[in-house]
Length: 81
Image (tube, rainbow, N blue to C red; front, side, top):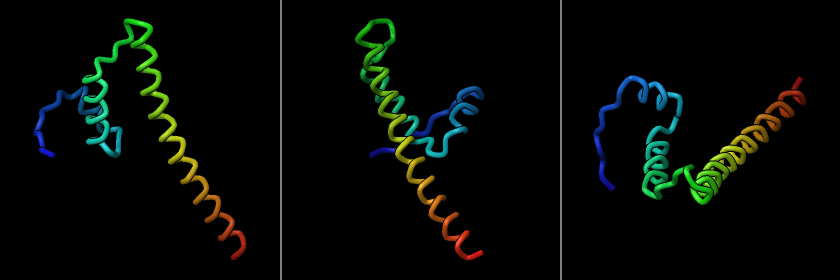
């Protein structure tokens, strides 16, 4: 693995700043670019939909786990009161 130093304009910097794991966002964007996924064709739309669906499913799994932990914590705190 190698490190790469890049310079971003203000718009891209503000967009990327929203994400906690900025490295992974850049890696995923390069993977999509490398696959030449374009929404100009039906096949490109399908590919982009699958990439988006995979990303969203991973986020939903993460949020489900966070909510389970939060619910467990709330239940524990309720029993202590």
